[in-house]
Structure formats: structure tokens, C-alpha cells
Image (cartoon, rainbow, N blue to C red; front, top):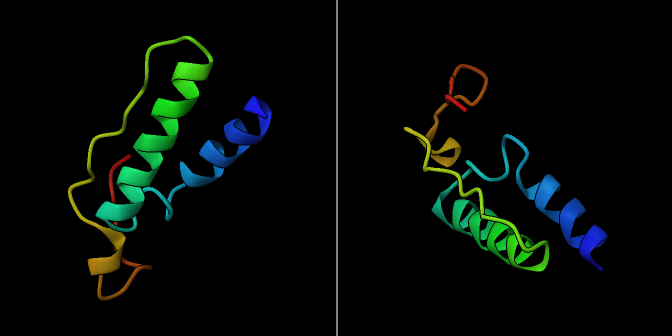
Length: 66
């Protein structure tokens, strides 16, 4: 089950998912917290990006720092 959660966190952590909007950012950090508890390690939360992808008028031209 931990492997399944690890893969889900990996998918949610992909560019375009976690940084799409505040909900998806919170979802990633929540999943990361759950995985870190199960793996008995410190969590590695992501800070919010400077801009959300959902607010970009043209996603192809938006550069969001990692």
C-alpha cells in the first residue's frame, strides 16, 4: 500500500498537477505528509509557486519556477 501511495504522490507532484491551483498544492502536501508518516521520515512540503497555472492566460508561455 505504501508503494501505491508513493506512486500517487509522484504523480501529484508532477509539474502541472501540484502547481495548477491552491487545492492541488494542498493535496500534494497532504499526500506527502501521509507518506512521510508511513515512511517515518521528515516531510518535504512544497512552497506555493509565484503563479498558479490555472491563472495563466496562455499556459505555453508561462514559466513557473520549480
